[in-house]
Length: 193
Image (cartoon, rainbow, N blue to C red; front, side):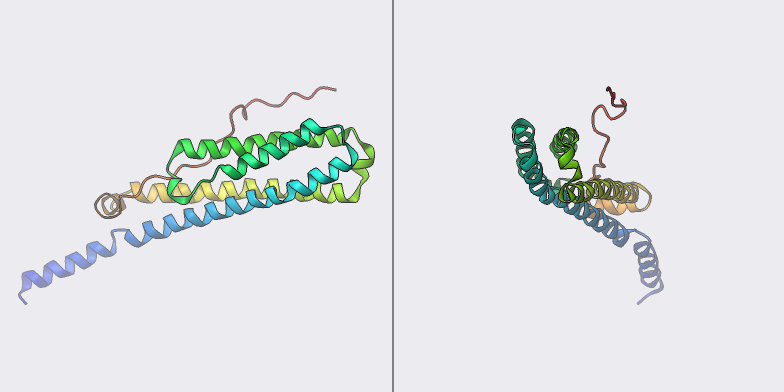
């Protein structure tokens, strides 16, 4: 082995150790893990909804339209699946967010219905379900924030030097899409009495 070959091998090892290949892989796995947390929290909410609907149904049988809306929105959410290989597709993420937003809106209307029934509000079952739902909504928000942070780190890692070279020549990974605010979120809701 001559000195040039040895020097070439040493330089190659040094350059490969700083290419970011493993870091990019680790960051992408963090995105997938964070997405799994988002899906799990949405699933928790979907699992709570039938119990909440049944509890309200017992008190407000004539509020059929609101209950039907929630059932339909929950079914629509179940139809919109976003796999990890589609996390770079803004249209798919938007479709997922829209379905989840419709379900959130229907749940808000359900809670307004509950305000009209003092006996329902006093029911321990309803209060427990409402607290679980509020906690789940908070978990969804936290999971979405963690996902966005993982996406930020991943996207930065595939765009910064020298990792961008590794990505361009070896991995060819696409940027991931973060969650964005729902349409109209910048406008404060109007409360009237």
